[in-house]
Amino acid sequence: MKNLKKLIFAALLAALTFVATYIIKVPTPTMGYIHPGDGLVLLCGIFLGPLYGGLAAGFGSMLADLVSGYATYAPATFIIKLLTAVIASFIANELIHFWKNEKKTIAVIIGSAVGELFMVLGYFVYEIFLLGILTGGLSASAISSGIAASAAGVPFNMVQGIFGTIIAAVLYPILNPAIKRSLYSN
Image 1: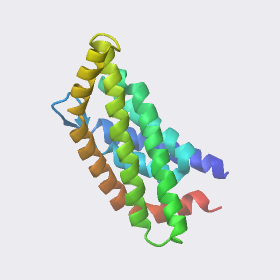
Image 2: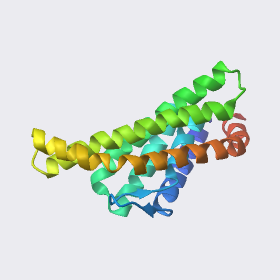
Image 3: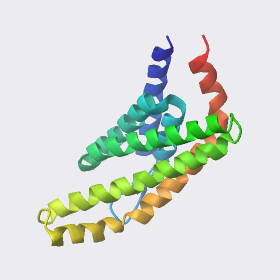
Image 4: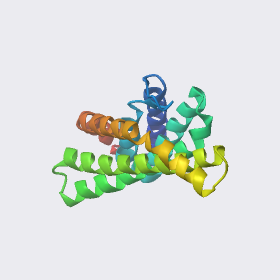
């Protein structure tokens, strides 16, 4: 029964991640967009743990890329958002346990910030290879141009990561009692 509840919550959070990513978009000059979906990516991991939370975050985010016309990014988004949720889950939940359930919001902020740093790095690396391949393979000059072009997206991904961390920190104390009660009660 517990796994069924987790699966249902994972599907719900994947759907909410998709909606928050797909519906609310602020376009960037780098042809990408900033969205509040990362807040839900983080909460997927923190509430559901690394397996269910990571898969919910990855599927919800990947689906938004597929529907939005960013299919080239979909495989990377699945992996990057899954790992972002896993990192946030591990760090936040370990800190909550270490601090004996005190300072939960601080634990969420720290876990989220580290997860979002991974997200920024993940897209930076993916775009280097993507742009390198599109501009002539993996030669030194193609990789150099990929690094330069990919670096332009870093500030926008950092802004998205900051807002995602804020959203997770604000929503966590509001949603935590209801989600924990629903998931772990009989």
